[in-house]
Figure (tube, rainbow, N blue to C red):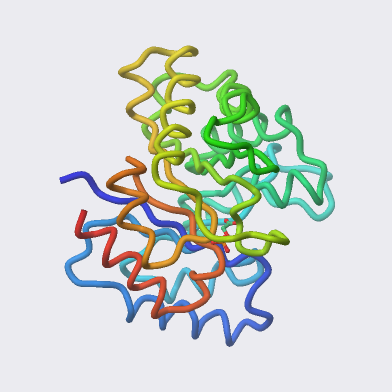
Length: 254
Ligand code: PGA
C-alpha cells in the first residue's frame, strides 16, 4: 500500500520555544498507530533542534533554505546546516516566499538543486495566485518545469512537489476552502506531465505530488482518492494536534 505524505507547515507560529515543543509533543501524541504515512513537521528555524528532539514518529522539515553551503550570507541558513540538525526536508518556493520575499523560479530552482546536493529533500511549491476556473493555468506547469532544471533523474525519488493554489490557502483574503478534487487531479496530471517532458513518464511517477490549501480532516480523503494526490501540505490545521492527527489518520487509511 502506498504511503501518504503529510507535511505540517507551521509558518511563523507559535511565538515561543516552549509552545513549539509542546505543540510538537501534542502532535506526536495525536498521530495514529499504526501510521501508514510519512509525516514531516516544519517549525520556524529557531525551534528546529528542540522540536526535532520531540519528534518520534514524524520527521523534521525546514520552511526554506539558502542555496550556498557556507559563507558570507548574513541571515541565511544552508542545507548542510539543516542536515546537521537532522532536518530531512525543506519547503522550497512557498507562495508566501514568492510573494513577500520576491523569490522567482530561478531562485527556487537554485534552492531545489542545492537541497538535493546537500542531502535535503525539497518540497517544491507551485500554484497560481488567482482562481482560474476548471483549467489549470500554464503558470503551474511553468513553475514545475523551471524547478527541475539541472536536477538529475536519480534524485527524483527524493523530491516532492506541492500544488498550492494561492487563492485556496486559508490565510488568503476571500479563501473559501480547499480546491475541488477533480481540479486537484488535473493539477496533478499537469505537474506530472511537465516532469515527464523533462525526463520521461516513468521518472515523473517517482516524484511525490501533494496538495495544499485549506486542508482539513473532512477533505483529505477526497484529495487522495479523487484528487489522486500522494498527500497534503497543511498550514492552519497543523497548529491543531487534534485536526492534524485526524488528517494523518485518514490519510493512513487510504
Ligand atoms: P493552509 O496553508 O492549510 O492554512 O491553507 C497551507 C500552506 O500555505 O502551506
